[in-house]
Length: 206
Image 1 (tube, helix red, strand yellow):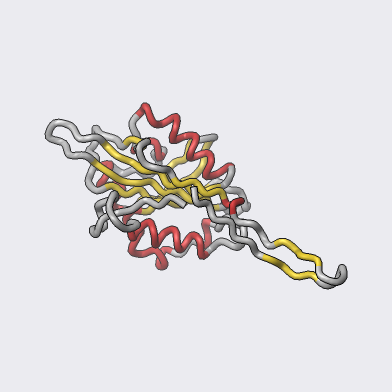
Image 2: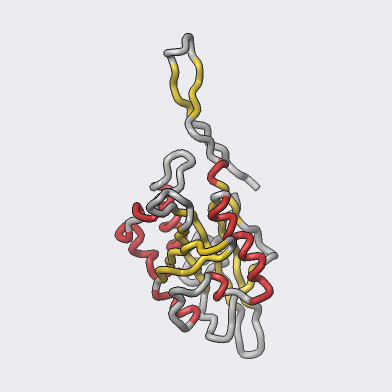
């Protein structure tokens, strides 16, 4: 399993440990799952992810590969230097990367899958390099359909109004479909009435 690491500050996304906001958010999402089930949007508890809320957003799938931001933490306002609510998540990305992002976003809903994408913004004259990561995890709506996603976008500094992030193709992307975890399956014993469940955990080491 590929993991995005961060240094010893909460805003430096390419160092020695997982970013605490993303770790907290994923732990909460995982705690809401049962077997292969996708957690429900209604089950997300803001109090349980209080320390990650400033980086967190909720997406609503409005078309294949297109998801709009419905809720956004304060740090996302600061990164983009505008209110991102109502905007597609692609608003944070360079135009050249938006078609690739669209494929990944659709995978979150259609597979469904957890995805973490490494990000960067190359350095330029009088502008330091920006590094970061995007985490996306599927959620179901009130009808049980996978049309929502919770996630976090972390960068080590503001992008500015005229600048957007790029997908960092030099680092591995994390992709974990929920189907990689086997559901509980009945195992036959001595007779048809003697059944029990076995849970097998499959770990992606790629």
